[in-house]
Amino acid sequence: MYRERFPEGPHHTRQTILKVVKRLRETGCVTSRHRVRRPRNVGRKVQREDVLAYALTQPQSSTKMISENCGLSKNRVWTILNESGADPHLCRACCQEMLRDVTGGATLR
Image (cartoon, rainbow, N blue to C red; front, side, top):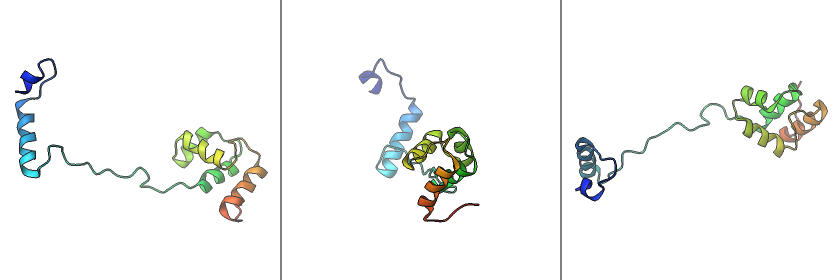
């Protein structure tokens, strides 16, 4: 019947059709189980402070360097720096001031 209705398409094998029918009878649903995946941020969550702290300790680092060391994408690092009013190549004093604002006064040594 499927081949008659869709003569031009790729056709499912008999085994596939039987598997879907069996699943429908057992579960009442034709779709396979929803795959449970591990959340993307299962490890440690990198906070803005981490990115700014790295930029502070390595003032000449690029977004690529920061992203590799913090485990984030370059786009995410760039977003964090821009939201903080920073630039990857800021002077140490400017970056330290922004880090102080983010951490509530704590300073890094």
